[in-house]
Image (cartoon, helix red, strand yellow):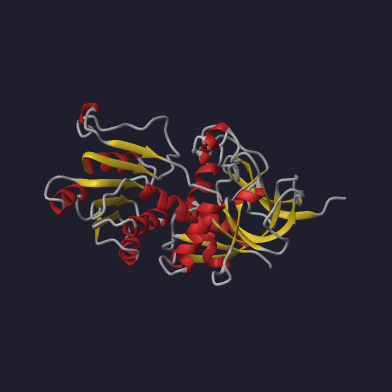
Length: 355
């Protein structure tokens, strides 16, 4: 009889609960990881509300670290008992899209996003990792699980937003929305050499965190018109780069309007509502402004993850202040509700599993 584990599942749109599932078995190229820490993401809220369609008995969660419990026969470079981080995106690294360099779009659009989408996620005592040689990453001894888990999505996605923004050395960049991804985009912009980093949000605590993570100027959109202030800060020309970190029509439009001709709009947000996204026609130069709109999905793989963990290890970034709440695994439903309501100043709830 298969050994069982506890899992937190989406029973259907808007419905969640705990259930017992068999502990998964690895295929030859796969691994099973015993979960030690996980993070709850706003993406989990979007999924639960039906943004990617209905799901039944699907284990939620896509940001987790743990200990290798079992390895497939063909997995090399790891041993049972190793502490590992696993990116939210787990490509195969073999298909045409992966070989073309678009690993997050593995096999099909968004296909690298498997956890809590096309397979069980990691709000469970154990989780399955495909193509483990490429998707497991050792956690350095000096980094705690509480901190390493941020490399799995928040750092990779936020930094991607900055990387895709084509920020000139010494250039100007604005980041709209200073949630966890936006804060990591702020760090990334600073690391990439931006000369002026502007953070925009409407929550005082998040603006304070924005300054902590490297914003030179913060703008509270409930108090000022961000676009007017950006024009003043840039001498009327607009920013070189704008990063959208909310997934909203208003913030996307603001990015297009804030960017100077030839600038780049980098989208890191998850647009979980509506059937289309409108581009402001005039500020887009009626289609001829040389503005680039770049999108992307959290880059995965152990090379990416090793670099991110290296930034933590060498003190370039400490994402741990993003953790505003901690919950035991038995209370993950409370953490998910908190991410939906955004109450109590929440940024990220950390889920602690029995070790």
